[in-house]
Image 1 (cartoon, rainbow, N blue to C red):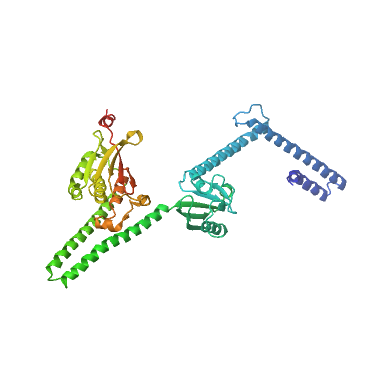
Image 2: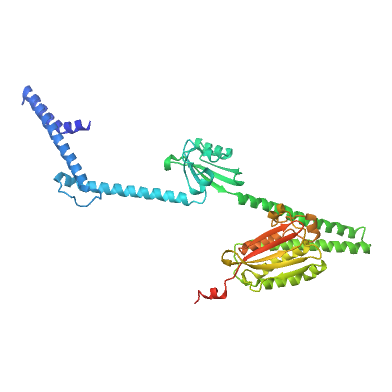
Length: 457
């Protein structure tokens, strides 16, 4: 079609002129026909020659560009090639710039997908995985490419949400539980991709691990329920005795003295509970701030032991401190470290068998001997292994009745755990039923004076 146009366009003006001569009888029929034929042959020849020249010139100019689009041709060009060469150079440069920009954008998109910490999965219209980032490999596997999403994530709720987005919905959110290898709660946001996407992707799935959030919500609910229960019991006792003293026992001095003693015990129990709750709240509020003070552990232990000597003597328990002399200072807050060892030694004295010994030992360890540890060991009844992982939970008690009888609030070890979290330390618990228990606190050792002074030097 284009070739016919190249022939007829130059032929038409001449043909119109011949027709005009024929109509005015300036030219006869046969001469007019011969003239038209000659004009047509001439137009065809000119069109072919011009097209061939331009094509040859273009090919010559393209060859002259060279692989690196050099500004000058390695060989002399014909006039036609030289004329069109600047245009070809500009087009070639624009194309290369556009290709480089497209490649950069593609690489940037890939880098962003790889850097997103949340799992991202791209699926096509048939629900096949066409792309996923490193975080998603844990869920779909390394060889998930081109496989159905169900091969890696078989949860019905998630698959139903993805199918709904692929059919008609623009986006869906769903929560589901994965039980393997450990139970986790995940929230998935599924959204349709409008317009072109990588590898034919039609929808994108973003996963959020909300296990800790759900666990925190459950812990808060349990905390409120337990705190309410712990406060309700002594309040009920107090109210009952107050009503009795205002009524039947108003004039009974013996009953009044006995009831007042019980009421004092219950009020003290509530005071301890409220004090521990406030202390725990303060610690959690500053848990993200790491203390940097320098504390002598041996002086903290001596302070706590002095406060517990009388109570230990009442139960005929001896507290033996066997800390090494070279124990270094630790990084921490003095008052909070006192709280840690106050709770641990108080528990040891409470639960140790009468006429036994509580031993406080310590030393240096950890990577590069950068940690200091202090252990509190009692000779009590011991703790069964199934209870040990839960001992630092709020209000968790191995023996609820005995703990309340001994004045425990169920918050002591929870306070210890959160203080150690703030200090970036840890608590290790070992126990054997019938033998006793050992609670070991690991803290960061303070740098020596020599190391601390070296930066200034």
